[in-house]
Image (tube, rainbow, N blue to C red; front, side):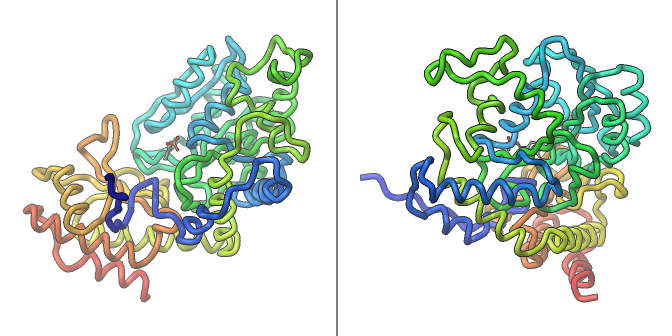
Length: 402
Ligand SMILES: *Cc1c(COP(=O)(O)O)cnc(C)c1O
């Protein structure tokens, strides 16, 4: 006999996945509906409208794609890219290279604009590179969780629109927790995910795009052979599963048959969006900023250093320099084993150099912040780090109670 598994209690303060809202977990136990059941189609149409709210867009198209955030990213890029197209990717952290990797596989001509990871780009620098390289597409990350930096986008978007380029932005780590203005910033496609500030389990990607993009996608529409032999297209999108021309129709009021919708995940998404919208996106942004201030105050009061430019730091991630002589992984392990607290390490040049404390969605709560700071201080002291003791939680309390 195999026993049912049991899970330990955790405080998850990573940049994703984060703790799910209790009501999200509850609705996932709702009985299954067939994917074309009118009761389910109604839920899908509500989800479609709700997805637009944190994106701050009036776009007609907004829907979910089955798969984690990168599935939406890949769907977006392969819908726009045709072989030989030039794409400019300004890179100020790890995830820009994922965009490049996907674009390269789609046979684009990829141009990276690179810089150190300790700050975002000055928008003028990106605009200069656009003028120099004349790409068809500019693709960027809004919040680089690997190094905790966030990119201002409004001027780049305005420039792209003026010159009829496509502007694609991956907003996975900011959606719902930080302001995103898809329409005002002239973003043509924005992509997010479920497991960060929405506090829904991993497994869905969210996407919205405007009519400029829709026009391109419509020109590439091909229906599956098994449904019709007539709708063939020499410019078809190279993936079937991630074909936006079909998925867009799947989410329309007259859905075509494509994949089997992950109905229980759509229940979860509906609930995550509902909770966020009822809280109010402005209130959610303010909550993330307040908790970020408390985390930063606590970290600095210990005498630890926060990595990177504070002016462009994401409110949803705090990267902390690991002090000399301390083994970052030992600290993380002890936090997990003794306190049930999970924080993250980092990647690439920052691997072994910084820890990352996430501050996202349902995990972004006062009691989590205070617990993580108290545990962090205790573990650092236990491991012999030379820090100011007794100050971290007090400094955070001052932020909350001032
Ligand atoms: C969390 C995160 C991802 C994760 O993508 P998944 O496909 O959902 O695993 C990717 N990029 C960034 C910037 C992230 O913060």
